[in-house]
Length: 430
Image 1 (cartoon, one colour):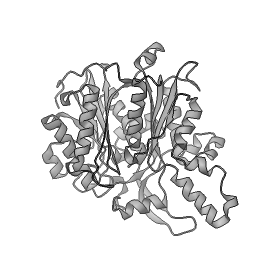
Image 2 (cartoon, helix red, strand yellow):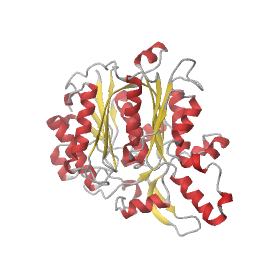
Image 3 (spheres, one colour):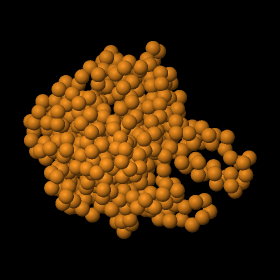
Image 4 (cartoon, one colour):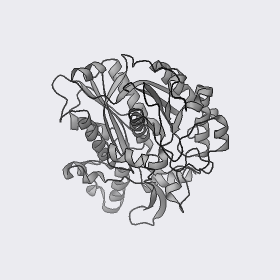
């Protein structure tokens, strides 16, 4: 891999400094454990028996969180929150602490929150509907409505940190977490906030979600080998594996971060958002919408294709989706694509739906900071059609990125409904 391809421009003044990182996934309950397990080639996928309360169960592949959020949060808070909000609080608490803040950011600091969801409070809806049908309306929890609302995780994070600028909840299927970060960048750029806590969360390992995705034939059926079931870009991929968790980043205006002497992990320098307008559950042929989002993110960040060393791909492990994304990337990068290390981290912790783009954004920042592209732990044989395109997919071992000088990377997300989001990150420290 070329070590000196193109000098990455300094972060524009319209970038956002990334000062805090937080995640909880099937690999670990925080950033350090998730990252170390990812680099070690570990996998959080297993088999899970799910079914309606009192009804028959069915076995599905799933990537359940490595650390139960109820063991981390105070009992009183856990009991008030849907599982999706619990994950968001765990990740936000880590990110907030990592950014060097106490309970609140301090007087005069304008703090905003943007936390996206895909399915949101689905667990609460199913649980309370069962209670309604079996025990009657008087047994339904008085907290049902707040817990089932899509904005519930964002609202809880806002309450935790004292956010009084804005609190938003983008709902764009599997692109929700990435779109939250794009919105966070805009809030920083236009001066609506000094600090934005942004990301995504999901807790959808429910009978209805499994059944629905299974009926779409979107899920892997490799039950005999769960650890190898999620196989992005592999010739034998047969569908995705559902996961759960959350990813949160703290974004700040560079001026605010510098004034308080904050440690900066990197910069969010650009975002591109498009829509396919093609099909509710299939990407546009050739990945044209995804390509447009990637191109828009590069232009927004002031980057050229030659500046990029790493891409964390959406790559869910579906036959059509992975190929379309590979076609999209080659449409933008052309021959440069052979020099870019492409990771597909859903192989290790599944597809976390509305949280995916945010978790993968955290991992993209870490890849630049640590100068290491994480592995695709289940990749045995690259799809020949994708191989022909020239996609440089990282194999079962981490791939080093250039050891000195500035770096740039992209993270891509796609969602049902035709949503496409691409985020551009840079890291300038040696």
